Amino acid sequence: MKSLYKRKLDKIWSQTIRNRDGKCMKHIGTHPSLLNAHHVIFRSKGDILRWDVQNGISLCGIPCHRWNDNSAHTNNGPFNEWFAKEYPERWKYLLAQKEKVIQFKDYHYELIENCIIQNYPISTIEDML
Image (cartoon, rainbow, N blue to C red; front, side, top):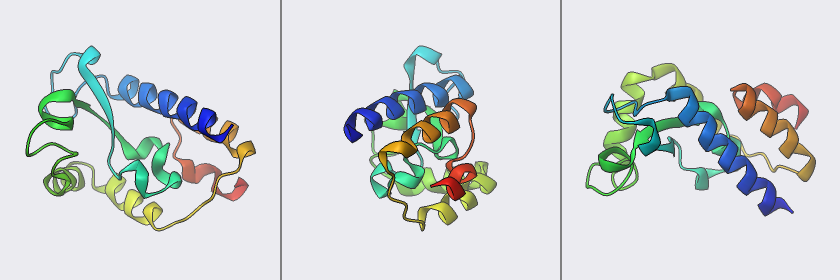
């Protein structure tokens, strides 16, 4: 059951990020159909940021997201430096949230889905978790 929720939330999160940004935020002008939703702090680092809209940014598939030595996945150091410079408040928020460990229960996923759809940071529902 949990994996079904996670897949559903991953799809909603991805679509929300791409709809919000509408273009590659690093190389402006990429066609929306070529966008990838990228987790600034990798989703493997914990569920607290996995579906947080503040942790998402739209990137073009090539060269920003994958497939070259300076992409966000291959070499995330330069990407993180760029993101911190362009979006300093979001970067501070993400670093603070990254330290939190929250284990989600099945009944939390509906709250998370609503946060994503409403474009709210996950921290807005933290007291309910």
